[in-house]
Length: 142
Image (tube, rainbow, N blue to C red):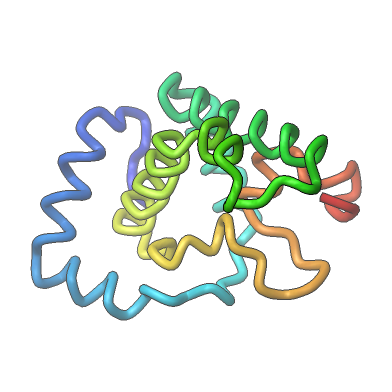
């Protein structure tokens, strides 16, 4: 397992990896991995990293606040201006890039962004867990 004590320069590392032949092959292979079941230790490590580092913690907070806002406005769609005004796109991009970087280091396939896309009914994803989508037993409504 890679050492994640100091993640300084993770964006630059990701950029270099994406441009390398190894990186291109890795992301091409995992571009649409939406069915990936994440080992629980991976979810815990990601949560720890995201809570430990301010930029990531702020991005998770912004995404969590947006999800809470959407729950108060079930009628709001992505066709509405307010949806885009409140949507923390930079936070989403930061988390997506960080997960891609983490995947590049651990070879856990995150490029298809399986942490945010739930493709099976009643399946919880890592992003759900990080954003409070689990009850105390690890199940429950989002």
